[in-house]
Image 1: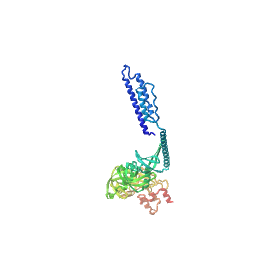
Image 2: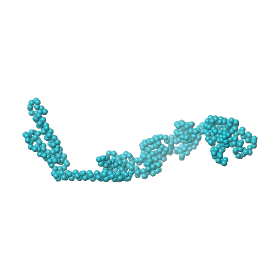
Image 3: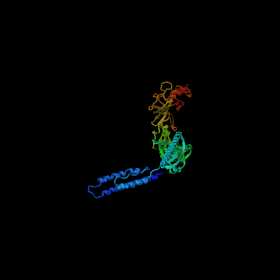
Length: 529
């Protein structure tokens, strides 16, 4: 049987013979053209035209066909006188016959057997691939895993095999990290690894392959080992307005801005930057959603150490207002140290509704330290303490019993807040209001902005307390009507007529706020029943 190499050698010889044949024909034509003749005889003469077709015909694919494994036919004898071209034909055809001998029946049968064997082998491989592909479809449906032998390093990852089916493992799915280093990839060559199906690929031609992942399995194992309170070394991967993401062992967790530092911060970038290596503690784990909450402030030096000594009670300090809330303002007095300035410490005389009425963000203030708690990281500050207290001199300008005009600032069922002298806010209990005459217990309705006449019935400058009573146009004072009509029990019932008459002209002997002032009308009715 002739081997494939012999056949290729014979074909090469046949092409060489064709080349020689063409060269000899062209040389013959040139010799004919060089014979002296009339000027009209040139390359287009009939003699040349008669030779060219023979050359073209004899150098046509007929020679190539003779180089095939079939038997080469012997040329028939020439009927006419042979030319130079015809003389070269027997030698050329003889050489082709010797270069490509005919295949025997045994060799033909052996070649056919090999072709059949190759066809069966490919068919068997295709069948194995189809069976392996069907297995992977079943494994993928059940979210299962299987073993793969890593064969070689290829572009983008590793190539393996599963029961005859080609498997591709991308470098991004080799380990926990998205970009596995080259050493990790080379380390897996020749080893058996457990993987999961990531994607199955099949086209119309029947080609089948699979993309697998090892990272999902490693992630499941890693998440199973995580515990709340565990400390890890991590690298800051990105920073947002609400915190920083830190990569620990291939997975990312969020360090919220509130857990980034022991002190209040507005911008996480002021504490860490991308690429920083920091220690973090696992604060929360959500394995179902695969979310990880981390904390860094436990590993930060406590900035409150020594604050009590640096800011003793009564010390005057300067600070900048960083943020304002409904109950006060936070003022920074040192790096990472903020104190609370409560709304009640903003003014001596005014009842401030919102801190923004007095201070603004970015404003620098001089404050006084009221108290310090380093364990709770609390620093209490006061602003009004740096100002003169007008309440201490109010007893001289507005003594008890004096009359004044006031403007209603707030009104409620318990009473009204009235501002006098455009500075001091006093409280007028409901019991100190005039009767409206619309029924038992009915009082004059006061609205915000109303100007009324008042009488000072109690004053405590140290406690910044001012109690007022309403005075009518007829000179009557709120609260005295009930006393004179006998609604109150006690010693007032034993007063003689002279004392009772004098009480209309004097300040009530009980000017303070009573329990009844704090009760609503409905509650009072229930108590009377």
